[in-house]
Length: 139
Image (cartoon, rainbow, N blue to C red; front, side, top):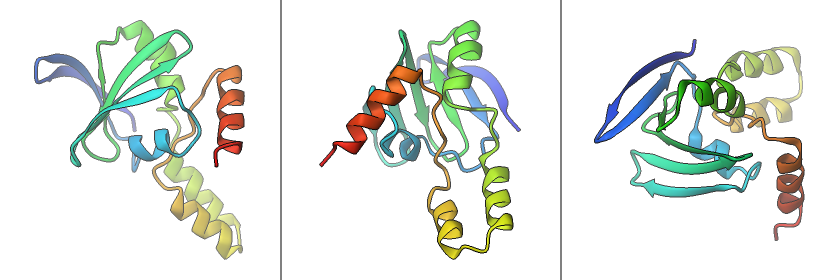
C-alpha cells in the first residue's frame, strides 16, 4: 500500500513514499530500460538520481528498498508525472507471486526472483523506443 508524507531531509523539502515492497531505485534505473538519468550520490546506504522524463526533471533518492524520496516536486507534478512514471501504484509482489504460482517453469521462477525490486518505468513511447535501441546496441 502506497503511503506518502511530506517533510524535510536535511535542508530540502521532500515527499516520502513508502509501502512499495522491495522496490529498488538503483535496480530499476540501472537495468537498461532508461538512460536519461544521472546518479548524483551513492554512499551505500543512500542513493540519489536526477531523471529527465519528457520535459520534467525528477530528483529522487532511496535509503532502503520500498521507500522513495522525491525532492522539489509539486503535488500536481507528483500526481501526474512522478507516480505514473515510476509505476508507484503497481504491486509487483502480487505480479511476481502470480507468475510463480501459474508456471511450472523453473527458469521463469528464477527470472521472477532475479528481477525482484525492478519496476517497469512508464516512459513516453519515443523515449522507450530510443532506450530499447540503445540497450540493443550496447556492447
